[in-house]
Image 1 (cartoon, rainbow, N blue to C red):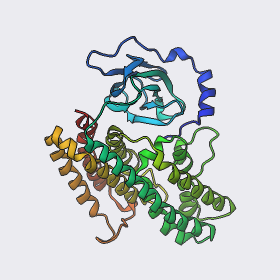
Image 2: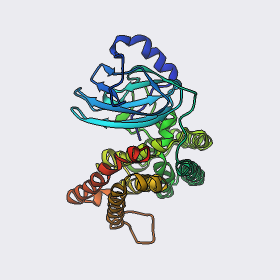
Image 3: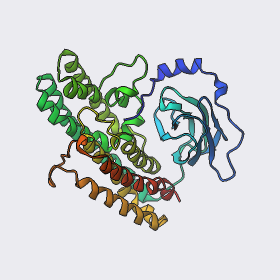
Length: 378
């Protein structure tokens, strides 16, 4: 789940109201080739507005008072690459692969709204340089994996929707967590489209002013807290299925690169750290550990596909990632309802000390995982 993004139409309205001078561009990239991005509460300064096609690195610093998100965007608001939850006073390096064309770099203070944006022109022949064939194979395999996950999700969502529409609250509760697994494993792809995630996976505290609350979590509240399924919830269930069928059809057209796979794996770990470990994601059902496992599995799949190239470029990093993925998988297994099941204990039964242990394991993995993108483009 990510903070909601405005539609392209709404964004254009906001852009017209936003002082364009808030985004300032300096003339040249830094000597090492990185674009310096200084994100504050109302400004977004970048050190270059033109770079050659290929791999681009953003050296991001948040000098503001709010957590921010920095993205490289296509003109239609699809995401090339992004980093969420960059805390005040912190820095992050984001590596992405870009073809020739027009883009925007967006800083989104508070991780909401249109954000403050800077134009970026990528020059060249229209394509990136040739890369290791193993990376092309990894991208192809990941695209197939993402489609498989989407295809497997729709029947599970149908089961959930049928139970909601039948007014069978207990059956709907049983179907809720399984219906989300495929989404959670490939969430960065869903988020890259910009419009689907806000409709299907927004939490109540992430709603924009005037936004209607739809999707899984609105139904989760109805089932567990309100214990009520009426006409409104049945309509929401139909809408959820329609939106996810749209996602299923779009997955095959997603822009996927080796760096977006690596950055997406890190984003999945960030999702765990900011939503699942805290218990905020599934606050009514307490099925957070199922989502947690989905995020970890998705990150591990991307990593395993990129591992052959990462190993030849940085063997020590691969050794550390293998170690930390294994440790986190072992820790999660402690919370299964049984060793042959995909079910997990209710997260409200997990103590603060146990949550701290899970958080520490996620952080231990997230740090080396943040280096994966750089390792595959060496």
